[in-house]
Image 1 (tube, rainbow, N blue to C red):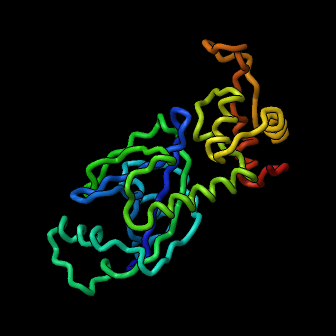
Image 2: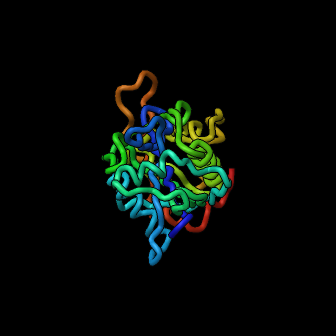
Length: 239
């Protein structure tokens, strides 16, 4: 589809940092989000999944549409021309790839340790980067990431978050730190626990976290049936 593209913001959580997956475009300075164009006979959600798989090798990931970016000067001619140089086609000045185009933003939350992404034909690297220490980015991809983060923070108030970002078993302090990292603010421990328990999506396990300096905290896991129900219906108590 001429002039309509998709960009994917993939979030992961590792070493107490919220990270985003980026591609390093060959022969160019700067990094970019996994993105591409939509086929004419393709649903845009299918497009997003196909593009992510082609650009990074990732598949079977739930992507959520969050915004459309349409600034008239958002296109980067250096990147679009590279497509022609890489494929050895001559790019006429009025070619649609060199014109203005809109992009539909999708974001996903993934298990960092389960992701084995790889660069595609146009990229020389596919790596995770700390959301607070991003490298130089192509076009308006910095703005796309910030809008995805703002959307995630909004959804955090009405939808459960953590299943795809934390290990299967986790402590309450680990869950709270995840929320604090996403929101970029400190949360009151007692109030956080009260709210999390009120959602009825957690199961306290008999095991405790071993090898910690203080009293060993209990481990928890998500009740997946109630978790997915909360995703569909929203949390009963908003933040």
